[in-house]
Image (tube, rainbow over all chains, first blue to last red):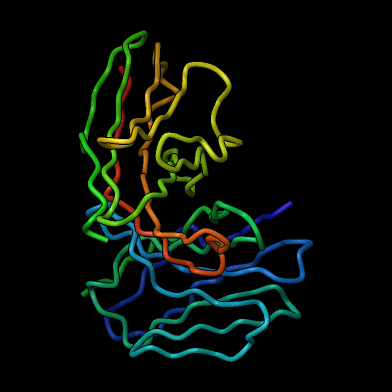
Length: 114
Length: 120
């Protein structure tokens, strides 16, 4: 069975602070993909990143960075120098091999205060 | 992802009525997925369709819910005799998954803006 846990329901930070969103997953598969999506107040889901379970290199994209640690089954997401436009709900998701659907966590609502 | 069009964006129904949600995939995409997001929860997979075929409906409730993706026109998620528990946001996603690949390999899943159903 697959399970994705985002223990932080809501986080508030002041603009320009760094923030890390946690994601812990459970799967019996040895290969899988992990994703992060952003859901701004407008409601759509915006794809942020996909990570193969074989690739444990950290990834940085501008102010966004991801820390994948297979040993702890975690795929955490850090926003550096947060901005008000980062305010959204962020979802972590997992897909096992050969599957047709993503398993989503319950999301973390991030509020960046100006 | 602006290419996946869902309508209506908001729908209000009384208990017992029918709800029809439509999804037009991105141009060139022939694979459609429906997800449901209950209040304060993550998205849950419902059904995966290709043109004229239901490929995986393991997430669909056994009663009152149905989905189709006809040869022409949008995909439709239909909920009969709605109840208050059906109130949720329903998201459609599409992909151009090529035969022989899997969604995991391509990771190209584009979501629409969702349809928010409220049952009074």
